[in-house]
Length: 490
Image (cartoon, rainbow, N blue to C red; front, side):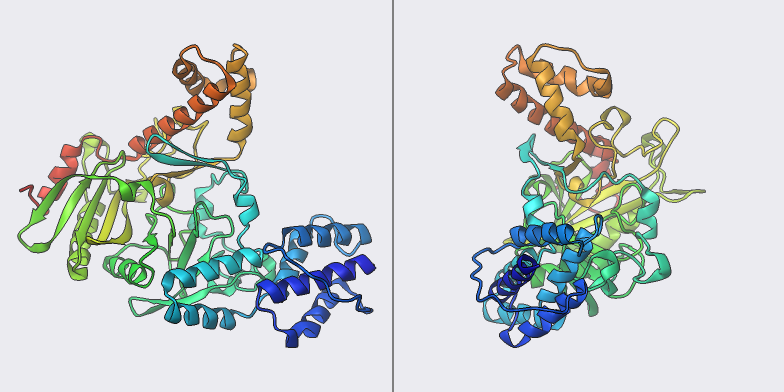
C-alpha cells in the first residue's frame, strides 16, 4: 500500500508543476483521491521530485498498483484515472480566467497553446496515443491511420447525437459533459466564447485528427444547421483566433459529422490541403464589387468567397447555400429533396489570410440509390475496404482518417508483394489496391519501395473518393451554377 500512497504523492507533485494545483489545496485533493479508493490512512513519505510534463507513466503506475491491490477492478481503469486527473485539474472557471489573461496579455495563439498543453497535461487530450497514429502526405492529401478509435459506421447514432441514457447530458457534446463522470469527462475543460452574440464554448478533441483539433459548441442543445448566421459565426471565430480554421459539417446523415443533434463547428491549428488549393478562375458580380468567388482546383465541388467585407461574405455565402439546397439536376443524379427528406447541404469553412476572409463552401448531397445504397456522392463500393465511413468536413478538406485495421492489413499486403505471393482469402477485398500497388512497384519489390507505393496508392484512392463526393464532376456545371447567381468571369 505504501507504493500506492507514493504514486498519489507523485501525482500531486506533478499537478503542482503542470496543472496549477495550489499548495493550499494539496491536502483537500489528496483526501478526495483517498475517498475515491476507500483509503483512510496515510503517512507522508517525503517530497517527490517529478520532471514529467505528461502523466502517462504515473497513471500507468497508479493503474497497475490499483489492479494489483484490488483498488481498481478490471474494466474500470479509465474511469478511475479520469477521476484522479479531474481532481488534480483546476476548476473550469480558473481555466477561463487563465486563458483570457494570456489572451489579453500575450495573444490568441499563446492562449490556445496554453489551453491545449493543459489538456494534454491533464490527460484529456490523449496525445501519447495520437502520436502513434501513422501520418503521411500523398497525392496532395494528408493521410492518417487512426489506431485510437474504432470505425464509425452508424449514421443513426450521428442523427441522435449519441444521446445518453437518462437524457443527461442530452448528447455527447453538451456543455453539461464538463466534469460528468458517466462519460469519463472529469478532465474535460472548456473555454467560453461568443459567436454572433450567442454563448458558445471551445474544447479540444481527446482524439484529435490534427494539431489542436477542437470543436466550438452552442451552449443551447439545438440541431446542427447551416444558415445565414453560420457565416457570421465562422468569421467571428477566426476574428478571435486568426491562426485557426473553422468549419461546419453538412447537417445531414452520411455526409455530416458524428453528432448532428447539437450545433457545433470543427477547427484547429492546421491549415488543411483544401485551404492551400489554388483557384482555377475568379468570378465577379456587379452587386459585390469588394468580393470575388474562386472555383477551387479540388477533386470535390468547392467554391471560395474572398473578401475583407464580412457583409459581402455573408450575402454571397447565403445566396450559394440557398440555391444549392434547392438545386436539382436529374441528369447528374442530384435530387435536393424527396419523400425521404432533404438531401443537399453545404459545408462552409473559413480561414483568415492577407486577402481577408476566405470562406470555402463545399457542396454536399447524400442521395442514395440501389446501385449506391451508402450514397451516390460517397466513397464508391470499390473503395470501401479502405474507407466506408462518412466523408465529413475534415476529409472533404483533404485530411483522411482511415481505420486502424489498415495498418495490419497493409503490412500483410507489403509482405505478400515483397515475397511475390498472391492475396490471401482474408484480404480478397483488397484486389484493386493490391493490383495497383504491384503496378506502381514496377518490378521493384524491396520492402522500402513497396511501402512507398502503398502510401502512393492510399493517396490515390482517397483522391478518387473525393472525386466520388463531387456533385459536379465537370467544372462547367460549377461555373454555370455561379453564373446563374449573377457571377461572371472577367
